[in-house]
Amino acid sequence: MDLSYILNELGEERENYFNAVSPPIIQTSNFTFKTVAGFRQALSEEFDAALYSRGNNPTLNILRKKLAALDGAEEALVFSSGVAAISVPILTLLKQGDHIISVENPYSWTVKLFKNLLPKFGIETTFVDGADTNNIKNAIRPETRLIYLESPNTFSYELQDLQAIAEIARENNILTMIDNSYCGPLFQQPIKLGIDLVAQSATKYIGGHSDVVAGVLTGSRELIKRIFDDEFMNIGPALSPHSAWLLIRGLRTLPLRMQRSFETAKTLTEWLAKHPKVDKVIWPFRPDFKQAALAKKQMLGCGGMFSFTLKEPSVEKIEAFCNKLQHILMAVSWGGHESLIIPSIAGVPLADYDTGNARHQLIRMYVGLEESAYLVADLEQALT
Ligand SMILES: *Cc1c(COP(=O)(O)O)cnc(C)c1O
Image (tube, rainbow, N blue to C red; front, side, top):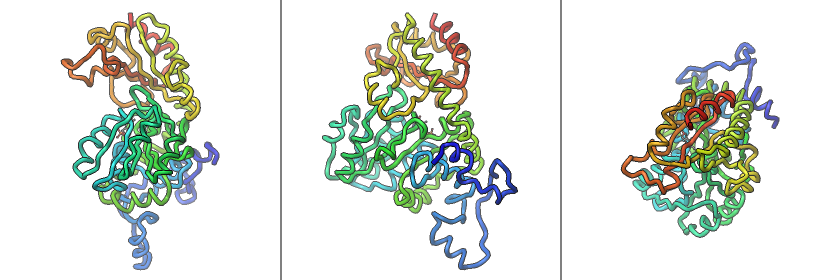
């Protein structure tokens, strides 16, 4: 399907709403029925019916159609956060006694899901370095039900070979799921590489303006319907119609914003790599990235987020640099119009900071939509 068609037309039935170009926000909790037969039908098959907005809502359904098509998936579900798009499918598809193999260092709340929440239900997780597919293969047990990937992650950017892992999983009858937030649907298409479920924080690139929290999950109709019918309806992580509308608006410009963020990240990483105060720059599309070949093989483009370290990685130097930035904002999240910085040390208790720990030294930068010269000037004055 043509990208322009997906973003501008798919799912939009304009004749049903006065031929308005922009779809309405159907701000309703419930939908009426003229006959008991119609009501009965909707109650028996809520996945396909407009009955109640905890399940379906027409504004959300426009968004779902576009997101499914972008991923090359049969269906999409949208959630009130990216984290819900990760936790709800896992709570649906796994049961007591099941085992998960996860890559090391996924998103922080995903780690908490695996370490704190799932053990309460008797689900155990083994973390492995996913850069070597054999580590995943060797961790498989008879009760392994899910291989959980995040490629790249959003701090140190390790990749996994999605196609190779999907093949191993299929041979062993194990589900695969990926957090694809970093690349999004335009820069990486895991379903086409054989991955079963693709989760994404729509708060990031899809929303794109730092004004909405949302998540998306795509996969086969069979899996998505099962998740909807069971835990999705029970846990209740529905997105509001207004937030869905904001995401539809975000999608209109997604290709432009991603391309811009990607290109500016390339400029900034090249500039930083040559700076005398900078030690390492980690970004999957840099030629010296340790998995550069795999990145080029399975990613169609690169997200605009990278990390770097200073030659003098003391707490004082890192803090002084970050505190001096004037335009690049210090904040969590990413994917919006504004460039952001997070020093790893902000999340490490000062007493635990270890200068020798490569992860502690990392400064993560997300590149927004500003002019690159404006960002370079801010980095330069803060580094000197
Ligand atoms: C932000 C983020 C999430 C969580 O998404 P929310 O929308 O904040 O719930 C998950 N994974 C990654 C990689 C993220 O960056």
